[in-house]
Image (tube, rainbow, N blue to C red; front, side, top):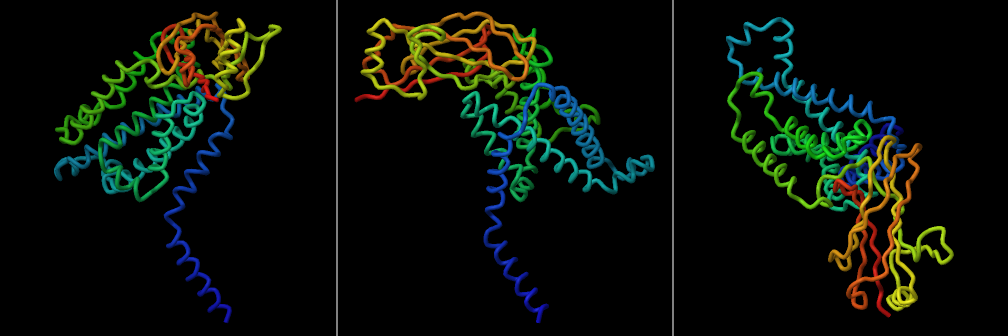
Length: 360
């Protein structure tokens, strides 16, 4: 009787799993995103992250080169291999599986690590992009299908390595931020370069050539994007940016707790000789020392550019508060939004804050 009950329970469990198993990747993604925001992130992990990333790069290049060599070797060449090489050849499918699985979990880890930074920097395009690709790494059947395409493999690896590099660079080289995008391009080239074809001198497949070509085009196009649309420098960001009337530590200072304001209230303040200020609390690693620039926009139209004092990186992720203030805005009576974008003096985008103007 107990056996029948157990069998019935297993049948029901299998039926339930078959019915709702499609939800598991979404639940895993949701849990992964939530838990990624709860992880402790500090700059002390940078060296470990860098070593892990470049060790994985060596692993991937070695694995792909060996697999390409074995796959394209003649029977005579295989017979001339050493004993350990023959043993690896017999397990080439296992090696391919290990390479796919290692890439899957590496990319998943990097994406989950970096998703909160995209959120804090309000890089919504990159944020959604990472969410989608994180889903690819969690949904095994979809991953298995997509991983067959060289363009997908190359794009995933490029994104993962660029994000790891973007987080580590400012920590390891705080005095060399002017060359960040140059070195990012160099790293990108190293990632997309067809190393297996170089080492074993095999003829590249058409798909490999096209994948490398298209991604190279994307890399070149990236260099000409506006600074606030380029791949972000992840280790410098703003946290809790907001607006206020008048600057901090003054008698008429009034912080704005929301990102919207009544139009008449705003106009009355500005007409009363009160300035609107954008306060940018910036988190940066120790060693950073750069001037900040605020660019003000009204309805996405450039209004003014204000240079601010130098910020420095502080310990324990403390925020270095900087601010700029303005009183006169063109077309403010019809405006719907005021935006203040924050950049390093060399043009690297840090973040932005927007104030939405409500009509009565």
